[in-house]
Length: 345
Ligand code: DP6
Image: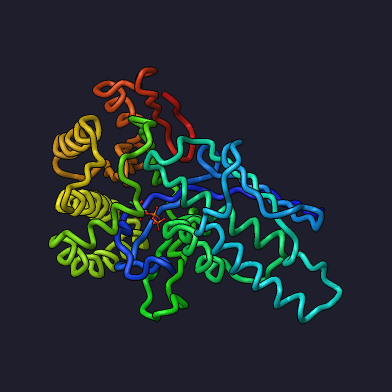
């Protein structure tokens, strides 16, 4: 039996992916860009063993067995990595024929799943990375990102640390739709993220179905698709220049626009709750009180949890401010922590 365990981090988009032009291959309607969080607190951990004695492929998610035959996206990742392994075995007959062995996959997250904290991104990235290690694939991270993308779009960005773009590409077969690193995490060490889990409840509308509802029914989405290319260029520039003013404004505007197209979807999709909106207002008031100089920026994925970006220097004050107005509560299971980890409320 051969067995491998790996972890993959969570990424938080600052230019959001929302909408597919091909739902089978998971090809997006726009480029996106994210910041990968460190693996200290949030990660998915996957163990895979290959054994010719196993009867068939099996999967356990957070300790519970799932029906793997119903998981088409995971199947895509198995198929693609097995095909690459098979090619190696065809060229070198001394290799163990792992591509033909059934696999047992055990995956767990150390954070609430489906609460808008990109659990599918780290989960599918961990799956593809672990399969690549198990099969000893020589492929680059960008090659693997094309496979992880077919598990969950945002997963392709979790294969890299630091600042990562997912280039939408234009080929019909998805060969140029892949993730690339814009800058490593060491590039901007003063930048910190504060994760505010305001609710660990499972979200009502999944990203997968929500984004297709938006594509089908939101006139505002067409406008967004004209705006994103310019924003991508401006965001890359802001990151490379470590320009927090530009980074903060683009991040907040893109989060707001994403939630606007959700509201413009018919019937509308609501991901933010009163606490999320309260935090947005608080961050704007805090920035205004600093003479309009951006000290903090918020962003929200498909859920009510906030991620706040700020410099290490200002973060202490920002945590105190948020914890004062929106104290973490046992009842709502809310928790706040910074990334890199240094304060836990
Ligand atoms: C709001 O990657 O979860 O987090 O490709 O259908 O699996 P699928 O969707 P998913 O969507 C993530 C949407 C988002 C924005 C982002 O991460 O860019």
